[in-house]
Amino acid sequence: MRISVVRKISLGFGLLLVVLALLSVVAVVNGRALVQNSGAVIHSHLVLSGLSEISDMTRDVQSGYRGFVITGQEEFLEHYFVADAAILPRIAELGQTVAGDHAQGGRLDALRADVEMLLGHGRELIETRRRDGREKALALVERGRGKEIMERIRDGISEMNAAEGATLDASRAESMALLRGTMTTAVLCGIVGVLAVGAAIIVLRADVRERERLERALVAAGDREQRKIGQDLHDGLCQQLAGIAYLAQALEASLAGVSAEGAQTARRISQLIGAANLQARDVSHGLHPVELAEDGLMSALRQLAASTERTFGVPCVFECPRQILVSDNEAAIHLYRIAREAIHNAVRHAAPGRIVVRLVAKGDEALLEIRDDGRGIAGNAEKGRGIGLKTMRFRANSLGGDLSVSSRHGKGTSVTCRFPASVTAVDEWDDETLAGATPSAVVGGAGSKSAQGAT
Image 1 (tube, helix red, strand yellow):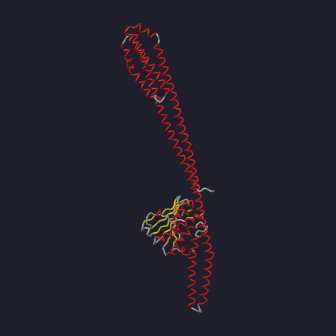
Image 2 (cartoon, one colour; image 1 turned 45 degrees about the vertical axis):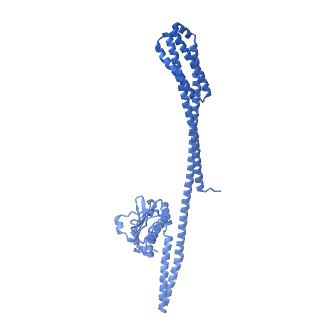
Image 3 (cartoon, rainbow, N blue to C red; image 1 turned 120 degrees about the vertical axis):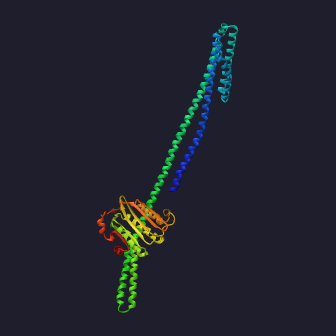
């Protein structure tokens, strides 16, 4: 079963929506994980910072009591008393930070016990130095109990630092993995989205081209059918009417000496048949207007002006200051149909007093303009939705040009088709040639002999 173009485009954009939804879900999930990892990183840095402070305080305690024991100077105890007062509260704060980590909590408890032992040992040495003197205090130092406690403290801090560093490295690695996954997902989703939209655009463009091809084929088929009907009218009906008119004239001649009334009736029949034949020829020229000769467009537009004035009683003039030759018969037919549609619209809707058809070329652009002095079009003419206006625009686009409609209420309407001059060949007459040219060659209308005799 063939899938319609609308469904193909819908599937493409539906896939794009699914891709965007997937990208959104991945972004939300990974974003939450990144936030959690960021919290873990901050927690690890807080723990490492606390351990560094505790390590500094233990060194202050040890150096303080050792300096006092050796020298007996009280200034060595300044940093000692500060560290002694702050170290256990800082360990308590760090305990709240690692409350959710049982392993680190156990290590911190062991560290607290060692620090308390270090503080007790320091107080003992200070009291001994003050009470018993330097020698007794140094003897206690030489036993190495303080050194042993400090080594346990350093090992405990190093172990906690290593554990927290491993946690920090794991959090960073997970964050990088999440970031890479998010970027990879975004790139893949972007590629799939671009492919989906690109496929939809390709399908849409193919459909538009197919529709344009079908429109051109339909218009061309319609034009061929109209030309065939026009040719049949010209070769069939017009010839039969001409034959009937000849017989009516013969009947009139035969009745001239027999019955004046009968001869008058035959003359009237001959006149009516002649008028019908002229009307049929106008219709056939309208359906099959442009001959294969290069000047067929100029001749057809001149005949169209004459036929308009003859049929509708509205003065219609064709102006062509320079001879413009169109060798492409299809292009000439498009231009003729545009002019005929614009003239018929003006006659039917605008009640004009005069219609002018101009065909000019200048530089790289040629122009066909149909202008009337009728009542104009109410509102914005460019927003017209009639099939005639759409067909005219389609024909102009087929020539590689464009069509515009300008109108002012009560001031008339102008329909202008601009198209590349490459479809024409302009005979660049000089001013002297133009001055000596016959009116029928430059301006064609109902009043010119060529227009009157063009059937």
